[in-house]
Length: 354
Image (cartoon, rainbow, N blue to C red):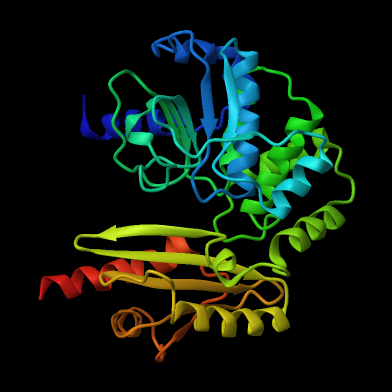
């Protein structure tokens, strides 16, 4: 075949591979329940659980996926890593769902991981648990398993969007309450579709779940969730700092990057002062651990990185232009995963090469 003809054939093949296939057509063409057939569930109850640092999306996705698997004939139950925060409790009350039981140690349990795929993000004992499935949107984190695992990782803003897709593919009917918690998860993770990492799948999930959940006053529902989630009255400094806290390892160093969102300018200024004071005297602070906090103002999109200590200051000044002794101004709506952690990691790795 001549080179020109071959190019035409390749072009046609590539074009065909890029054709969008409606979800309904995909579900009709593939029996997705058979995809799990290679996994040995051992007729045991399987706990579906999100990361240790849980949020609205991980809780909604956990409840939704546990329901889906139960309708597919598997003995699954949702679990949470800790008692739910006020916004998550409000979400469940709004949709008349009970709070899942707390599981803070996975030792000896059979589990499905939702919204995380690393031991670092998991609850205690996960290395001694039997992992049978992983449903996530983050970077892969080096999990190990003795048997076959059903693993699905899609780069979306919300893990709840992936669970929504699974409902579509399997053809399982979605009750109003389940659609509600998934909708709340998508709304929260995408900042009501205003986030920088929103995908087409997130938008489709948002629109369809909104209808199924019967949430007519979207703005009112969103503001109620925000008020429940992002006001910090009655919380200690430690509780505030650890609300959304993630740990990372960089060779011989470790770093903790918390994230805190405030409703307005006044709370933003108050939290900045309180968190800097707290970070200067974190109980049990250890050598070799750097502490950072991404502080966001939801009313303006403004974001700052707070830190204390000589090493954290040195790293931040190299990673972010204009950084001073305890804070750096970030771009609006900066993301911990996409913007902050990679920049700090890069500078730490450079430091350790000397």
